[in-house]
Amino acid sequence: MNGSDYYIPAAALAIGFLVKLPGLIQRRRNPMVRATAGLLFMASAGFAFAAPPTITVVNRSVGVPNISGPLVYAILSVFNTCCIVLLAYWREGLGTEVQRRVRRWLAACGTVILLISLFFALGEAPEERLRDLDTYYASTPWIREMIVVYLCWHVVVGAVVPTMCWRWSRTVEGWLRAGLLTLVAGFVFSTSFGVAKAAAVVARWSGRDLDFLSTDLAPPLASIGAVLTTTGFLLPQGQRAAAAWQAWQTYRWMGPLWRRLRTHTGLPVTTSWWTPLESRLFDRETDIHDVLLTLAPYCDARTMTACRDRALNEGVSAEDAWAIAAATMIAQAVEARDSAIEMGEEPQETGSPALSAVLSTGTRGLARISRQYGALQHPTAAAS
Image (cartoon, rainbow, N blue to C red; front, top):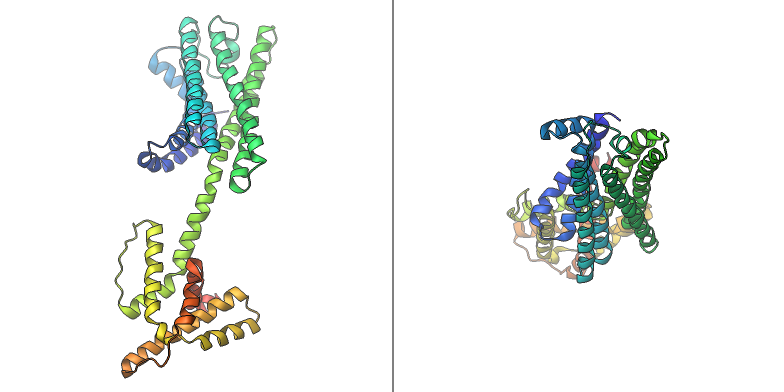
């Protein structure tokens, strides 16, 4: 693997971290947010610092040959720990017992990093190795122990996490299940990376040369595993993304009716484009609701019934037929109100029951009605 094989996933993960950064700043006291940000940051840093060009720069900058070795081991150990911590928060929340268990995992990770640093300081690795540090120094006193400690921690976490994910995935559905199964696949690759490295090191102990397992096979396994693992943790947020898309779609669909009623009544715009989408959607729905109430005396249930029956006879679905009928009734109510005001007439009947049926459809119902209202006003655009 060359430098780009490391830097491309590092950049992608860094972008993911930057996307999460505003949420981290706003909710920095939330342990789950911190764990997610830590996972993305450490995954990106792991790729960046494991790249041979970076290894060279770090070694030369610090002035200690192979100092990148324990640094990368420490970063990957923290990444693995973030995975298991985030999974614990996912499954069991932020209760006292979970926090106690998380502290134990963090203490174990801290011990691993301390041992890695200690063994590297006690050992001697004078010749810089960019790709085969594990196997080249597999039998060197203290460096050997450093490698063993890292690989043991990697394999332990790699065995615990997919087991937890697999058991949990059998009890859930949807985005969460997809994320858990992706995590299982990711840790299969990640654990295979550790096993391949360990096999190459053990082979060195017995006098054999299986270095290709460490230098050629393990790095791609680690790359695939890290990307899948990070994706697995992010996938369940697809539900939130889907909800955000639905909110945006609803907001956009409400546009035609909202703009017409706002023009009709001179209703001022009270929100700006930078206002959160949830607030804009609420304000738009409230404006439509309030103006429609003023049209109640001009709404005609007979118009809506006739229009719905006609649409059904033309093969329109029941949901769309209802929306078309309601939009037609509202359009005629607007015209009737304008005409009555111009002529100085009072409405002859009240259409409150018909309007109540419209308002009872809720947010998505109003959005569908508004969409059909836009089609009535611009049939050519709607047909295209």
